[in-house]
Image (cartoon, rainbow, N blue to C red; front, side):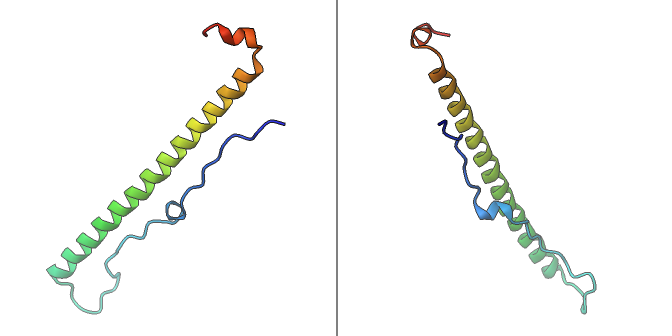
Amino acid sequence: MEAAPPRLTLPETVRTACDLHRLPADPTQALTVGDLEAAYLIRGAQIAECEGRRRLAVETWDAERALIDRHRQAREDRARPWWARLRPG
């Protein structure tokens, strides 16, 4: 029986949507420059975190594809007769 190709599990953090800070749609009081600066900093940190999650998802996906390719190549190599494995290529 043939083994299934390897599968990697994506961390749960890459499956959750990025939460980005937004200014209130209907502010009850006037926003100050400090409020805007704080919102800008919070949103920037959230974007950086989201990019890290995206990068982790892409790296996991790439690693899984590389494992599958190696698994497929090993299976093809095992299917070749022993004398064919002695010749390169």
